[in-house]
Each structure stands twice: as C-alpha cells, then as structure tokens.
Image (cartoon, rainbow, N blue to C red; front, side):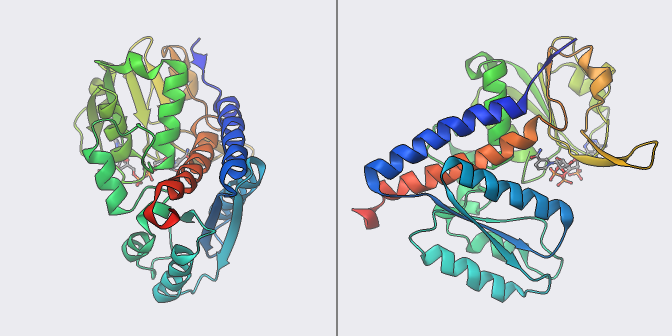
Length: 299
Ligand code: NAP
C-alpha cells in the first residue's frame, strides 16, 4: 500500500506557519494582509470554495472579505470593482473565482487585476515571470495556487532537491493547473512531459514517470497499470459522481484503489491537493503584502 499523502495535515501545518508570519508582519510594520475574494453568481460549488477561502483567511490573520456580485453583473461593472481594489492600499490580494458567467470577458477581468495583487498568478505578467524564471520557487513571485500547493506536497513527501533528473508527467494543459505545474517541475530540474486529450497512448507515457500529476477532470482516468511501481501520484482532479444509493461523492482523476497498490505515494480526493490550494492562496496574499514593504511607494 502506498504512502497516502495527507493534504489536510500539510495544509494545516502550512497555515500555522503563515499565521505566524502574518502576525510577525503586523508587529513589524502594522500591515494586516488584505484579500478580496470576488464571486459572481450562485454556483453552489464556487460559493463553497470562496467561503472556505474567506474562512481560512480569518484563521491565519488575513483580512479576507468576500465580495458577492449578481449573476448579471457586466464586465465593466466587475472591472470597476477590481480597479477600486487595485487602488486600495489595504488590499494586497484580489481573486476572482472562476469560472465566470459566459457573458463576462474573463481575459479582460484577469488582465485588470494589478499584477502585484494577482494572488491567483493568472495575470500575463505573472505567467511570464513563472515561465522565464530559472527558479520560479524562489519565493519572490505570485504562482498559481494549485501547482504551488502540489509542489509543497511533493517537497514534503519526496524533497524538492530529490526531483532533479526525475521524469514527470503532467496530465492536462490548462492555464490554471497543467501548464504552470509543468513549469514548476521543470524549474525543479525534472524532465517534464505534458499529456492532453490528443496525446497518443497516455498510459505508456505515464508508465515511465517518477511523478505523475493528474489535472484532467475525468473520474478515475488514471488506472493502476498507468503507474510505475513506487512513483508519486498527485491527483488534482475534483469530480462529483453519483453513488449507487443516488447520492454524490467527490473522486479524483486517479482510480485511487487501483493506483494505491502500485504508487509509492498518492494524494487522496478529497483531503489531498484541495486544502493545499487554499493554503497557497494565503501564502500568496502574505507574499503580496510583504512585497509592499519593498515597493517604492511604501518608502
Ligand atoms: P480543464 O481546463 O478542463 O483542463 C483539462 C485538461 O485535461 C485539458 O488540457 C484536456 O486536454 C485534458 N484532458 C481531457 N481529457 C483527457 C484525456 N482523456 N486524456 C488526457 N488529457 C485529457 O481543467 P482544469 O481547470 O485544469 O482542472 C482539472 C481538474 O482539476 C478538474 O477536475 C478540476 O475540478 C480540478 N481542480 C482542482 C483544484 C484543486 O484545488 N484540487 C484546482 C483546480 C482544478 P485538452 O487541452 O486537449 O482539451
């Protein structure tokens, strides 16, 4: 049986560290990191995610306020809200929960968030910083929260220094998870392959990998015979599936029972990557608040 990586425990440990650093920042500089989490509409899953983000912010001493906007808000109205937070010195981090309703121009929205307050790491300036950095994990930049959380889990499980020269496969190429994940693993000196819906024989490619990251959105896609014995498997997927009794439950992109007998280490769903994503957001908000101490306008 694999080592089952406890994301809840790792996230709790990370949050305790962050809470200490938030308190230290406040004591040294009087700054309380401020986060605004903007949600448009009433999607129940998105609402539950943003409530969790705001709650955890409070737990670590961040002023994390939820901003709830009507489903019919226009792109221009949303941009006005963001611009207000860009100008507000008490706000260090701005997150717009995705997906947005189809009538809202997501590209304009993400480009309007000031790069130094972009705690999701989706602004082109931050994306460019990630892809051009020799060591993107040097602690100076705002990185997408889920890949950041995955790297922390990998570090705690394998040690980031042990990644050098390893074969990594990332399944999925989204801007939110797959692409930044591959960039972080490359920065840690892995040889990285990226798999997507057009890849021929993804199982064969995975079988060569020491580390497999699944970020697809297909329940149980990764089977036991995709995995090299002893490999580390990080399951980012969150899929709501029907149970035989008509209920719902969350499963990942990895068939946990099949892979747990083969992998050296595996994250469960739920309780794996999810809590680390939220902790990563807190880390980014702290990083953004700290950066204002070094910026010209604060001196
Ligand atoms: P996405 O934007 O839909 O991207 C999915 C990727 O999977 C695409 O690149 C797609 O390829 C690829 N794909 C689809 N079917 C495939 C197949 N059969 N074989 C190989 N690749 C395939 O999804 P996302 O936003 O990256 O999210 C992925 C999953 O992670 C979802 O379940 C999401 O809910 C979850 N998620 C979890 C967290 C967390 O905190 N745990 C955070 C974010 C997302 P193409 O590009 O060719 O279409």
